[in-house]
Length: 149
Image 1: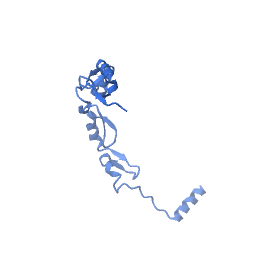
Image 2: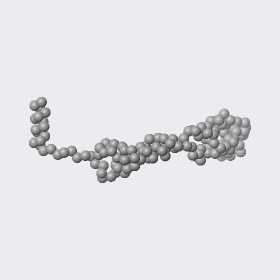
Image 3: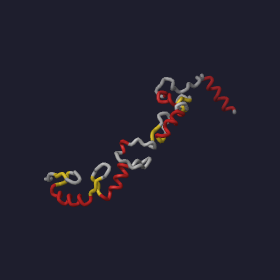
């Protein structure tokens, strides 16, 4: 039968009652609190904790809050027209130009403005081009002329 846990007064984790005293001694000796978020972290992992939780991976600025609140101008975003990735700071200028560029549609064989592309594939205008209809006699004549060559 498992013994009930006890909340560690140092790290606030639920610890098995049988090993609580040993845990508490080890925890108090090896746990430090992050000066940014006040989370209990092992001493050896504090710099890693700050790097992963409080340093922007794009601009490398160490934040005094959570990364979730950081609006980094170097963060990567996707252009809604061409689906390429750009830094946030460059995205507006790119999209201003990209909106009027065209993309070649392999289905209907037309150049479509990028801002119309999201709706193009679902529209009725996107149809494969119709091939000219040939009669059996026309096809037979083409085959014969090919053979004679």
